[in-house]
Image (cartoon, rainbow, N blue to C red):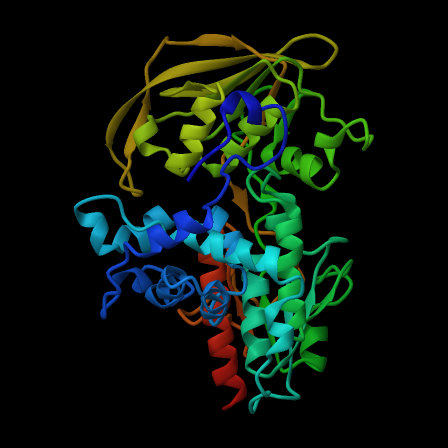
Amino acid sequence: MTERPAAERIRDFEEAPLGYTVEQAIEEAKRCLLCKDAKCVAGCPVEVDIPGFLRFIAQGDFDAAVKKIKETNSLPAICGRVCPQEEQCELKCIIGIKGEPVGIGNLERFAADWERENQPSPASAKARPPLPEGEGKKVAVVGSGPAGLTCAGDLAQLGYQVTVFETLHVAGGVLTYGIPEFRLPKKIVDLEIDYVKSLGVDVRLDVLIGNTYTIEDLLKEFKAVFIGSGAGAPRFMGIPGENLDGVYSANEFLFRVNMMKAWKFPEYLTPVKLGKKAAVIGGGNVAMDAARVSLRLGADEVYIIYRRTEKEMPARREEIKRAEEEGIIFKYLTLPVRYHFGGHGWVGEVECLEMELGEPDATGRRRPMEIKNSNFKIQIDSAIVAIGNSPNPLVPLRTPLLRTEKWGGVIVTPEGLTSIPGVYAGGDIVRGAATVISAMGDGKKAARAIDAFLRG
């Protein structure tokens, strides 16, 4: 897929990839072998009929392709942009054994973008199927992130009356507050949410479940509840100096940029003070987002500080590549151990240790080991800590019967059922910080289980 040059894109918040042309999409879709036993489908957490929609694209029937995707996936424009297809459907592609797999994610994005440009209103509103047996039964969904939206959309198509409760003043969860505009434009998120609403889903904003209403309150009105309240609690390393001004959590930093429109200063009077040298701690997609945002906000030098090597980095390869193209400086095998005062209460240096890799740990990655007396310092004006998040604690704290792990995740069965009958959960509130598509898979699985539960 063609991308904008790095020197151009670091000056704005527009998307880097430009998408397929019609001709490119048809040509790429024709590479699909249309396998009868399609391994790619088994690699998709939301069970998209991949050969089915690729066949329609190859034929030039893009409307049919979109409808085929939306049979199981309510958020294709989002998945086509942020889903790690290279680790899922494309990893299973038969063609990929001997060469480049079919660009399934790019083609999903193409189909969704074609619909947006050619069909001004959501396709579902025109052809909603008759409501099946579930009509009249009410289900509550807590959180409007990818898990909640998927669960809500699937239940609505099964005929249930679904109400989504969202804490913030806008819907979308991490899709809205966590992922930068240049990777996931908010107009796309808004349109995907409009599609879910067109299925009959009611989205109520500014409602804090656990405070405004408890889960117990919801069960008095609704037959079942799905909890998809995410993982918005930041983690820090617990090293000296983290309380200095200029040391942000990635959550706070990206929230200010995305929700408070810091990237549109001075149109929006909500700037983020970064200075000219910024350090991002971590190696995941959130760290790449924070680093690339820092460049666009005016930092001259941006470091990614990661304690392992590039091989062990959990971020998507394409995001690492784009960060490198844009001039991000990668400091591998490096561990921050202290932030130093730089004057006026502000951070001025990060002290680090050099690392080496030992034996594999529980994740299968080689364990980073400190090299004694290898301390060195990097001058910085700000630091952004992107080492993961913890599940939002409010709902578990206000729901005594809800069993949780020691680290805060809600305990569920394989179907998503919690310790409370009729209450299900999925996404980051169960997994901790994970991918958008895994959260969507949890939402789909829970919708199926809720349907079975309500049908007895």
